[in-house]
Figure 1 (tube, one colour):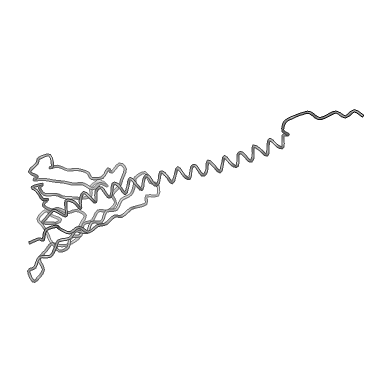
Figure 2: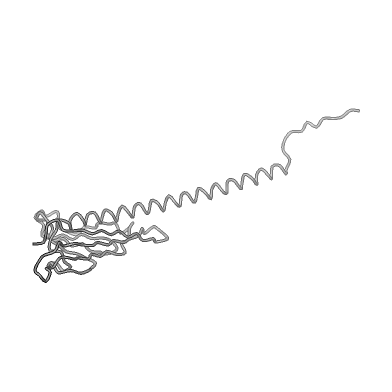
Length: 185
């Protein structure tokens, strides 16, 4: 008896279909994981940019308010209260300063500075990337007590905003309390 050996090499159709199916499942789950990672990275970057913008605006205001005097809302050193803007006299002849919310950005408006280039209106945040939703200033201790003693003026600043590219529009709030360096005597 003469038996012929089967010498054909290769894969059967069923083996190829199973291999392609397993490969497709692995690639699909890998792409899904990659998309999730990229989305998380993008949201983290947006949150980082938002935090940097809010902290820059807050730090700039704190630095100048701490050294200022005659805090108020109308430019004349009014008493205590809460408002969405603040005016005060800056130190070192840097004029009258007003911080306010305008067009979704924190705006610095300075006038009367001894150095002319300091005067003008400047935006502390970029409204094309960060939208400021809330800016409030609460002044306390700015007026005399009934006994005639002055208190140390303090300003509570609340700043809230979101990244305009964020589809979820998650708002971040930062707050701080600033006290005047010198006693209001």
